[in-house]
Length: 228
Image (cartoon, rainbow, N blue to C red):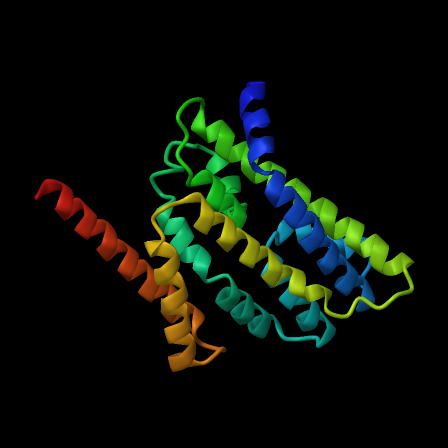
């Protein structure tokens, strides 16, 4: 692989680097406060690699939740990746064995980068490099946070809000980078509606389904307009 995908991917992932370091540090600190050491932080970041799911896993571990309850909770939290994955079928087509890692490493932030149009270069090398760099950032953040949490005798109350802050920052950046705000408006309105109807425990899957349906409808209508 040439150095160009690495340079481009590193430049594009700098915002993710800053976000993942602080988000990972928050996770590592909370994990340390529950009595879990650096080994837990490293291997959870390596093999789970899911911010919201790992935050949830801390309480599940501390409460000694059953395997079935843990699996169900993680599935609900990460259900949005079902829709992410469907949209990436053509994008990752022909990636060979790399596809296995690309699927595993498809986070929200990685998805936002690999779905951006690339004018030149080997797209698959770029996809793989972005995914790998983001994974490395996350591991470093989690390990560093765990070390800080074990070493610093101070209170870290409220640090879990870093996850919400990262999503708000990404939403704002996406809003400012495009003139077509329909997807963002559809996402916010659909989520709010489903939250009101189904409640905070069950709104995720219905909201993803509604968002996907509306986005497909908007895309279909756009094609119809072009051929009219």
